[in-house]
Image 1 (cartoon, rainbow, N blue to C red):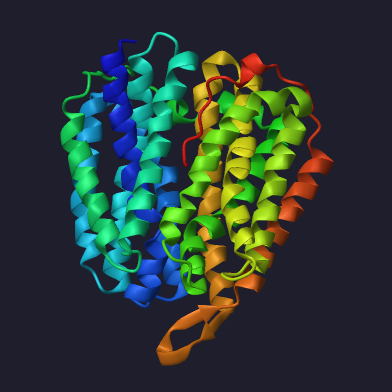
Image 2: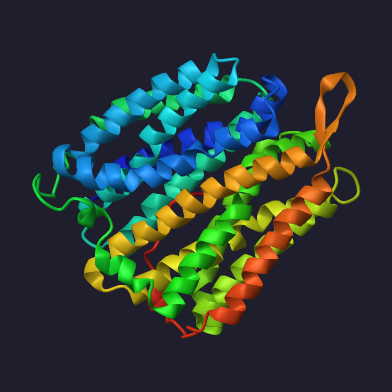
Length: 413
């Protein structure tokens, strides 16, 4: 790939994840402090991305891949998303805001797969070339967090408007991307094209089935982190919480480099287990951390995000890449994504809203605070149960060489 094409695609990835990082991280703080929504309403609004993740494979497989050039689909979805985000930013009541954010998520989540597929189509060697381009997306998320946090606007509607501006810019920029016509036939295929029956049959293999169920279950407590961490840090009085949370994405970059080393020593089973153990450690650190003498525990919980994410999700992608036949790899990866970021995080949104609301404490002047110690211990306990069940039931502990660890890149920062 020519360097100028790499720059163009890198800018696309930067904007793609800048937009997401700009509005999603601080959403709970805005809804709680700016609009005084209750905890279930906050969780349901945050969980709209899970609904988008469930719908995205069907939109991409049945519509975008068959009828639209990829760059045009990206442009239309991001332009529509810009308008929806801006309209959401001026709402004061739950129902209209929820509907608009849901509509936005239905537009945005398919673009994750579309940006990947457009990038793949421009490459000669995806394993060598995709990683350096995809990392620009992580940088975009980091820059968004640092910007929002430094401006001190986490409890306002401005992050939504900044994201809307980024979406508008990306929509217009998408028209300049390389022409990438649809590959799939406009006739035939149907749902079998999106989730082939043979991919579903892979779940009958015990190790694959256990991995799929564990991935779904671990995403339930994961939603506690994505939805409520920023609100938690703001309630503790942490300054520039969004900027500090970007440390999680910075640790992701470091952990990505460590995966080949640990893969050779631990193998699939214990790499996945270490990732889940980090979940338990992160929530325990949040449960006992504070803004005074135990601030280091808050940092530990944030920085463990790299271990949580890379050791479990990236390792899981490598594992599925090994287990699925070559012609089914993309479809099977899509199935696991649907189970995790779709079903798992949808259930997590529902459960996190109930749990956080159960531990709500009335504050001065009607401001609600929470018993975060109990909330994070609940999330830690859920993660620990999944870890124990995984260790007992998962039997595929083959060692994988470093060569197998190159290439797969996680979908979500």
